[in-house]
Length: 323
Image (cartoon, rainbow, N blue to C red; front, top):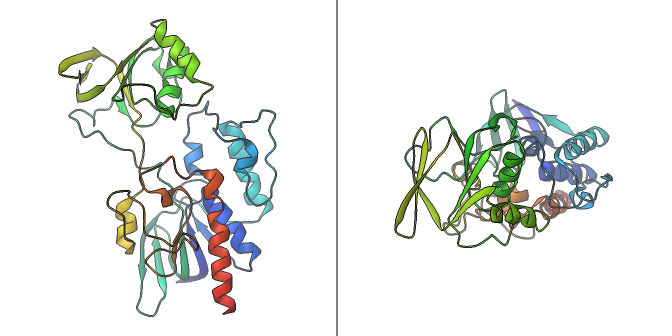
């Protein structure tokens, strides 16, 4: 049984930022990450450009300097690796947390794939990227259907359907067209989403106007087969031939994991119950940090504001320790 004063579950930017804040207040936190550090960013599309500028992604007062104002995926990966080195953070990578439970004496037990830990405080900073929103339509489980987009090259000279109309769908569509795929976008909204990055919308709209990308608004997918996607617009049934499908329908936090710890979840918003000043949940000594605090609304908390949650938690824990 390994004893720790604070365990952080999740090695993304917000988990790393929390560890740095805790270190500055005399704690020695251990970060446990089921993949590599900043695992969600690693799984971003290879061409990904961040919405945020580099200074808004900085943590631990380590400058993030890039030639362009908005960094790309590989620059972010290099930056956060450097932060871990400079701050000498303790990170156990490729170790999955299976269970967290609290005893009557207030000790929290964290069971992982490698070890059992005892701690007095746990911070959940797991994000939401690992859990896609499924459409729950027949055929969604087919091998040709993907909920993540990495790069476009394999889809040269193929017919691809992209489902969704927000940034991930638009980004994927643009990259697929550049690689020579024939793209149809099916979006249940009736007009372009307000969340689309303003610097890519004109290019996307231009390709639709020129007929390079076919886009159907008000499209609701009903079935996917080996060679077609069926959908309806208003009361009209339609189908489109395709070889591959990218269902870019968003992601959500792992509510089951949180509930198993005893954390209450707001049914309407999917937000865990927590105190806004301390980030402590209804389970005492268990905190949330980063995008997981936003529940189902992934557009509410980003790295640029979630990175400050760790300072709130660290200040509260230091005050309690002194008290």
